[in-house]
Length: 313
Image 1 (cartoon, one colour):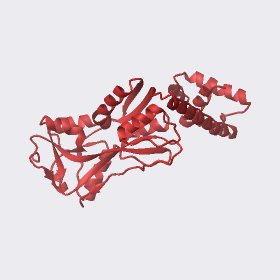
Image 2 (tube, one colour):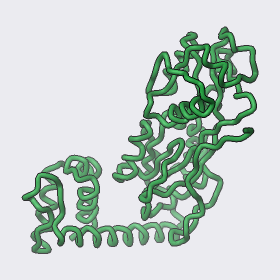
Image 3 (cartoon, one colour):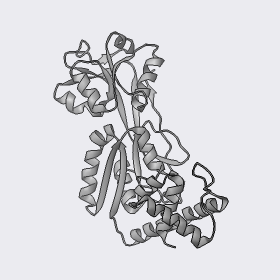
Image 4 (cartoon, helix red, strand yellow):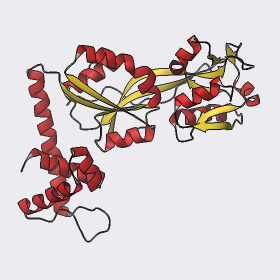
């Protein structure tokens, strides 16, 4: 029995999908099925209850899964310890990030990391927030980056940075010459927003709701670049993270207005699955992003999940 058997089996149990387990391990669905049958023959037990329509483990299967996770954890920790003893920083990092962070905040960190650790290959996927969580929970990636992180007992959440939310308008918008704007002033103008399931849109709706103003979007989009283009052509104002419009502000295409008397922040965090052993390369990457040394694996986590912060009330 090889370590790969336990890895494929664990991925199958956690995803409850032969196709996903196959994709995660770079093999065919048929190969996953063969691995499962091989394990059943090896241990002489039935692992999956095939009388059920949905994927369900037998009692023996659940015990095998628990042990598989222990074996994998010990193997991964041993591998990482040996790398650290040899002072080796190499390998691959799979990262899933929301578009706004991946396109605007992450590039400078990636450049710095690759210059410092040229033997590490970082593969970045740009995803919607809900898909980033799925990627991390299903072990499709090593690390994820999200805004307004949601507490989950299966996840470790490490604060990365905080971005201020601003009102973005085009250069010839009636509000463009104002440095600050009252929230209730925005009721008079068209609003361009993200889709309702995107965290920054939810935070924007909370801002309006708390101020007791009713503002419905004229347009809704699923990514920040399209929202910015809509703002540029005077389709309406948008509430966006300040760092994502820096280039457009510098070029004079967009004006960034602050909320008068209030500050609304967008917390950004790095997430990874609890119990996952971080390789030396992953630790170095997290440390570069946060500026904080990653504690030893057995130490209690030093950080807590963040939420939207409001000040100046």
